[in-house]
Amino acid sequence: MKIKNSHFRTIWPDAQDNTIIKIIDQRLLPHSFVIEELRSVDDFALAIRDMHVRGAGLIGATAGFAMYGAALAAPKGETNSYFQDTAQRLIATRPTAKNLAWAVERQLAAIGREKDRESRISKSFQVACQIADEDASFCQQIGGHGLELIAAISRKKGGGPVNILTHCNAGWLAFVDYGSATAPIYAAHQAGIKVHVYVDETRPWLQGARLTAWELKEEGVPHTLIADNTGGHLMQHGMVDMVIVGTDRTTYTGDVANKIGTYLKALAAKDNNIPFYVALPSSTFDWEIEDGLRQIPIEERSGDEVNYVTGLTQDKRLETVLVPPEHTRSLNFGFDVTPARLVTALITERGVVAARRDEILRMFPEKTKGIKETG
Ligand code: MRU
Image (cartoon, rainbow, N blue to C red; front, side):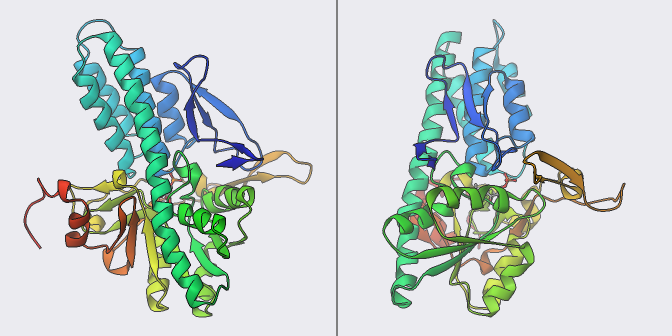
C-alpha cells in the first residue's frame, strides 16, 4: 500500500543482501516512520514479541523469515533439535495468532525435507517469500469478495456512503499488504463506492488510533476515530451499516478470536441487526480445535500497556506518560473470543462463508480429513 505515494509492503528482504530482512517498526507509527533490519533469530523473536511487527498475517510472514534466519545461523551437523527448539521459541512469542504456528510448521516441514545446509537456506528463503506473497494475494482476494458486500449495501442506500465500523488494525500493516478487514474497504473506495469508516481507537495499544487511522489517511479513505465505548451508541442510532474486523485465530466451527473488545462490538451489532463480518485468509483458521471460548489460548500482556500512553507532545516529541495512580495493578488480555452465533459471515480468499462448521468445511474440503465426525 502507499505511504506518501510510494508502495510499501510491511516486510521484505534487502535488495542487496537478502540475509537482511526489513520491517517497518510499528511501535513508532504514525509519528515516526522507521525501517528496522532483522538479522538474527533473536531479532525476529523480539520484533514479534514486542510488537515491532504485529497483526496475524504479518506475524506469520515474520516467523517465516525467522526460520530462514535460523537456517542461515544453523550449527554444523545434526540440526533437527535446533530447528525444533527455534520453532517452539518463536511460537511462544505471541500465542493467540494462528498464522505464527502455521508459518513455522510450514517452514519446519520444508526444511526437514532438505539434505544439506545450503539447500535448507535456499528452501527456507523461498518458502518465506511464498508465505509473504500468498498473504498479500489472499488479502487482495478477500478485498474482491468483501467489495460485493459493501456494494450491495451501497445500492440499498442509493449510493449514499456505507458506514463501516472496524476494531483494531486488520489493515495492510497487520499483513504483508492490503489487510483483511480493510481490503474490501480499499477495493470499494478504489471502485468509486462511497465509504466512511468508524475506527475504534482500540485500547490499550491503540492499533486503531495509531495504525488504522494512519493507513486510511494515507489511502484517502474518509474515516472518524471513536473511543472504544462509542460503537454501541452509533449502532443504536443507525450510524453503522456494517462491521468488518479481522481475526487472529478462527476455529473451523466459526468462533473468532480477535483484539480484546471485538466481542462487545459483535453483541451490539447483533442487538441492532447490523451485519458483523470477519475477514481472514485461510492461514488464520485453526483446523484442530472446535470450541474457541475454551480452547483458544488468550495472550496476556504487561499491565504497563494499560497504564502508560505514548503520544506526540505539542513540540513534536514522542513521550510516554502514566495515566492511573502509580503502582495501579492492571489486567491486559490481548484478545477475546466472539462465538460463531454472533458472526454474520467470514470473508476468505475463496469467498464469503457462514461461520458454521459445515459451510466452512464445504469451502475448504481438503481440511475435512482429520476432523472428527461430530456435530
Ligand atoms: O495485538 P495485535 O495488534 O497483533 O492484534 C491484531 C488484531 O487483533 C487484529 O485485529 C488481527 O490481527 C486481525 S488482522 C490480522
